[in-house]
Length: 137
Image 1 (cartoon, rainbow, N blue to C red):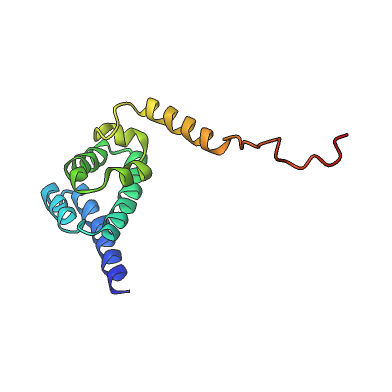
Image 2: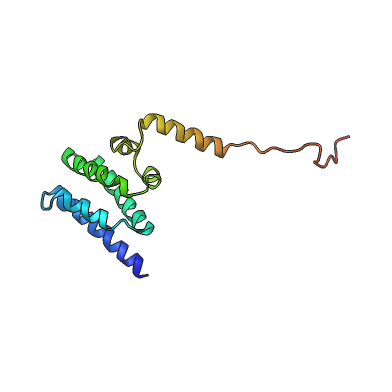
């Protein structure tokens, strides 16, 4: 329980740090160093990426483009410290393209949809010779 309390406190602090950075009360480098210091274990990384997804959506919906640019700059500088698979799973395609984790968001989306469709609708194979043939005369 202590670990989850610690990581919950870290995500709240990260959220507050981003908003202070948006309001120019602290430097971007302070946010980056906080993230680098707190993304050591997998649980913290998951919590940080969850917070990134919230901040991603918030920064996309804000009218102030400066906030979006700050978010992208911070994310670009910490992507090498966080598992790319987790980021690809939780962040928007446009954001992934901007931080250069994917080359083309439309192509990535197309591949994602095709893979999901292929897995979902995969036909099961039956050996008809081994099946019961009752009722077929």
